[in-house]
Length: 294
Length: 132
Image (cartoon, rainbow over all chains, first blue to last red; front, top):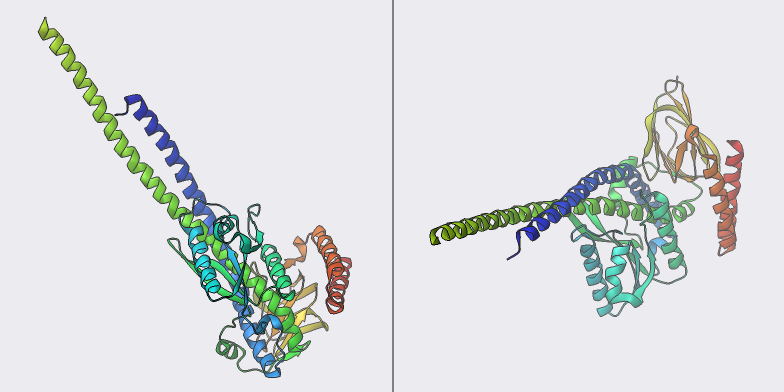
């Protein structure tokens, strides 16, 4: 049985830990709100981009002159998996969830006899995937220094991916990230970005009221410009969702930790009080029995 | 009095402008164009330049954009800018940095086509730098 002093120390240290987790929870809550706002602000661009893209791709599809980024190489032998995770831990199962999802996907592709290459964004995903696929990781990016994810971060990643595609290093590119459903629920998601999986064209047609566009310069040229930009936008969106998800996961993980610490303090306090009482009783018995013996 | 016309300027990070305007001047790749209500549908790429927005109340606002797209319809115009700032909050150093990056891009261009494009981009960018 631990001594009273040990118990006191233990209670003090758990209390200190609880204070830290409580503070982390509050920080995560504040960051979550900011991340959600950022994700909200980015939404108009991506929805309009999707509409424009659907529209123009239809025009180009008629001409049959779509860029390779959209149609792909026609093969699916080499897969590039872009796995976006957070750079920091202490967010519950957030990072491992994404990594596990990507790993299962990679295993499946390997079993099918495809070649897999992995591009990790974020330190944690790299740490986890390195254990099994160290030789497959071709590129990694860490965004640890970045305070607020900006479009330029996403653009840099997109540029690298496109470079690799142009160099013929892969045929299909899939982006892994965590979709932010709510504070307590983040769903790992896979999204194919090359060749582009286009949103349903139906929405675009209603948006333009069936108007016939003039294109300046010609549609193929615009599309050539638009597709890489769309990839940046997709990655940007994924990164923002990830940040929001990370903060949500961290918030609930830290909430749990705070609660657990509270329970632990209660339990320890009870043990401490019992033991103190036992000691008092023991001393009393000793005094009384000593007095009786006289 | 011209008809009010809905204009939106969106950058990936946020929605900058969404209001009723009288006319907008867009730096399209094939030359500047003024857009007003009932314009025929056009989709165009834009070069780095200045977008001038004339609101219904007659106020003029100027924004610097660094490339993007304009989706013009008879009743709305949406400008998807890669990055955009109001001219008042413009940072000169930012333009200089972009010019330098564009120069580096020319150096690393893999083929003639890409180089021509990069050079064009640099040209527009420096023209913009001189303008502001």
